[in-house]
Image 1 (cartoon, rainbow, N blue to C red):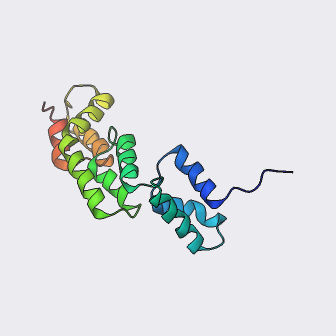
Image 2 (cartoon, rainbow, N blue to C red):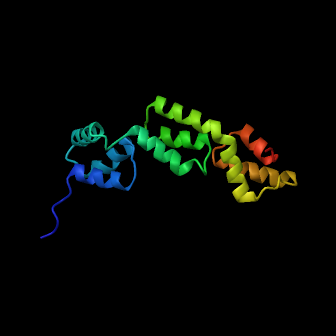
Length: 148
C-alpha cells in the first residue's frame, strides 16, 4: 500500500512551506493535479483567507532574494510576470529605487573591485554588466564613474 495521494490543499501547502509563491505560480503548479480550474481557485481562495498565501509576503520574498543582485527594473519585470496588483509592485519599487545606487555599487564592487574603469571598452563592459541586471542608465553611469 502506497501513501494516499496528496490533496490539492496539501500539495499547495507543501509548495508554500518551501518558499512564498504568487497565486498565479501556485495555480500553475496545482492545475495538473486538479479535477477542474474551479477546484484550484477554491483551494487558493481558502489559502488566501487563512493567510497561507500572501501577495505582500511573496513580494517581500522576491525582493529579499533578488535585491542584492538586481536592479528595480528586473525586479519589476519579475513581479509583473506574477500578475500582482500594481499597488503592491509600485510601493516595493519606490523602496528599491531609494537604495538603487548603493545596491548597484555593491554589485559593481563585488564584480570589478573598487577601481573606476581605465578605458572606454572596459567602462562599456561594466555598464553592460549592470544594465543586464536591471539597474537604470543614470545609476549605472554614476557607479561606473566611481562616484561615492
